Length: 192
Image 1 (tube, one colour):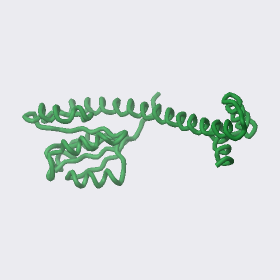
Image 2 (tube, rainbow, N blue to C red):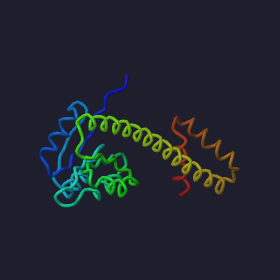
Image 3 (tube, helix red, strand yellow):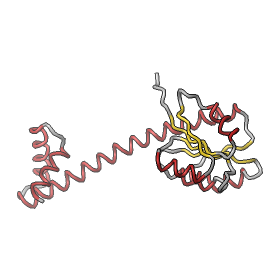
Image 4 (cartoon, one colour):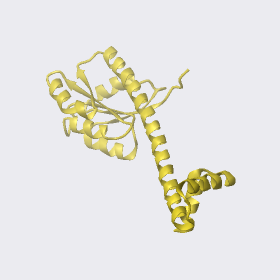
C-alpha cells in the first residue's frame, strides 16, 4: 500500500468564496493549505516556503494570474494550476501551457475539480520520482568528478597510470571503510 503524502497547497484568489470552496475539496489529511488574496502576497509566501501546488483563481486583484502561474512553474517540484473563465480560456492555454501550467476552465463542477486534483497529484508524484532520479544522477556525477580529479593528482604526483590510480582510490576507500568519493577527497586535500 502506498503511503499517504501530505502536500502543501497555496490557494491564490481575491474571492474568499473560491478559497473556501477549493479548500473544502482539499482534504485536511492530505493537504496543508495556505491562502493569499493577491499575486504579490503569494510571491512573498513562495519566498518563505515551498509548495507542491499553487492554485490560482484568475483574475487576481493586482494582476491577471497568468504571469504568477508561469513564474510558479519555474520552481522545481511545484505545480501551477490556473482557473480561467471560458471566454479567455483558449488565450490563456496558448500563453501558459508551454510553461507547464495546468489550466481549468471556470465555471467547473466540484467533480471536475476533484478529478483534476487527482490527476495533479499523480503528476506531482511523477515529478517527485524524476527529482529523486535526477538527485541520484547528480550525486553520481559529483562522485565521478571528485574521483577523476584525485586520479589526475595521483597520475601527476605519483607517476601512476589511470587504472592504477583508480585501483588505489578503491583500495583506500575499502581499507578505511569510506566511500570512493571520501577517499578521493582526502587524496585531493593531500596534494592541494
